[in-house]
Amino acid sequence: MEAPASELQPLTEEQKEIVRRFGITDEEYARGELAVIFGQERLRRRGEELGSLVQDLLRRLSDRYVLESVLYEGANLRWIVRIGSPKGVRNIAVSRELADDVLDSRLTESMQQLKQRIQDGFRE
Image (cartoon, rainbow, N blue to C red; front, side, top):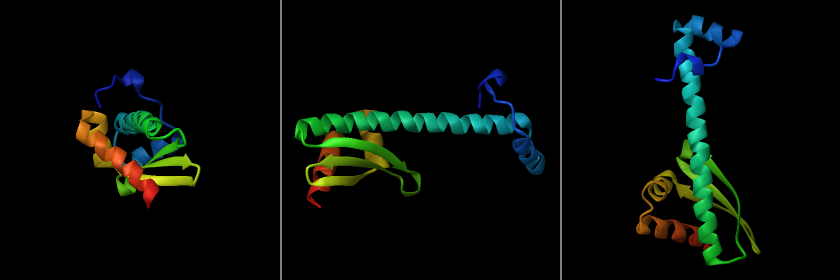
C-alpha cells in the first residue's frame, strides 16, 4: 500500500465503473490490484521454493520419483505436490502450516515431517 503512484496501473473502463459504484478512489482500487499482483507473485515464489525442497527430498528417497507440479489450494489451505513414480502419479497434500514451517524455518523437525508426508503419500 506504500508503493509510489508511478507503480500503479491505469484503470480500465470496467474498473472505473467499479470504483464509481463502491465510492472509492481510483488510487485505492489500483493499490488493491497491485496488492493482488504482489500476493500472487509471492505465492508463486513460495510454490517454486517448496517444489525445490520436494525435489531434493525425492532425489534422496529414490531416482524413480519425479516432481510434476506444485499447486496451491487456497480454499483448503494446502499445497498439492504431484509426484510421478513407476506406480503412477500421486497427488500429495501438504498443509499450508507445514509448508510455511519448512519454508520459513528450515527446522529439521519440519523437514522430517515433510519427508514423512511424501513417503506416506506413496503408501496410501
